[in-house]
Image (tube, rainbow, N blue to C red):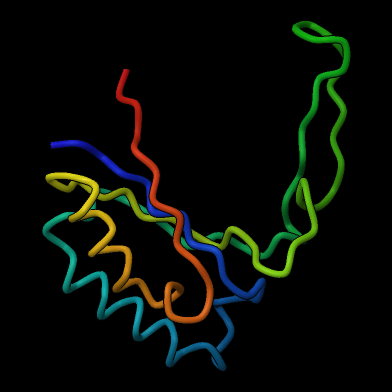
Length: 114
């Protein structure tokens, strides 16, 4: 069966803080309900912890890093699930149950398996 990445875009907060316990409970409930199709996934730390990497001059060029995300946005990439579903319709139906879909967005994208 095909794999789909469900990329979660939501508020850029520290999900490890106790005040987000209720939301994390919803994610745990989703994880249990969708366990049959989830093949992996994790939450990500805030974008402030990101490091952006670029190579100037193409392959073999100078490596340049900068603190923070590539772009500033209202919603940030905060996590992902790897879903194994029969088709895009099933992946979309599953993604609609991810809590971020209710007040953020979930991008569903097919995975190329090499």
